[in-house]
Every structure is written in structure tokens, then in C-alpha cells.
Image (cartoon, rainbow, N blue to C red; front, side):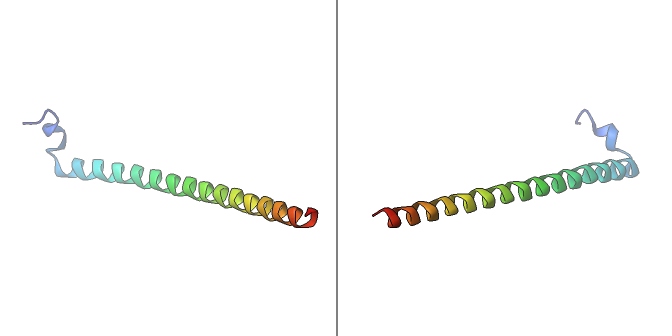
Amino acid sequence: MPPDSDEHSDPFAAGVSLAAEAALLEARLRLLQEEIGTVDARIEAVSDALHNMSHRTSSHRSHTV
């Protein structure tokens, strides 16, 4: 028998425990989704900056040649 089997022998207590864990996991999921959104925005900003730098560099080269 596992050492914590008595801890969840009460179905109501097990349900409450699982609901609390689910709420924590949902909160963590929301936090991670927000962080992913932040990273996506940063990637887009860097990509745009690199594109603009590349465009300016190729434009500058065509004017100096």
C-alpha cells in the first residue's frame, strides 16, 4: 500500500485536493500562455528590426554602387 493511501481514502477530500491542484495548474497555464505571448511579440519585434536593417543595408548598397 502506498504511504499516502490514507490521505485520499475519503473521496470528497480527494476531489477537493484534485480540484485545488487543477486550479493551480490552470493558473500556471494562463501564466505560461501570457509569457508565450510576450516572447512571440519580442520575436516579431526583432524580426521586424532585422528586416528593416536588411532593407536599409540593401538600399544603401544600391545607392553607393
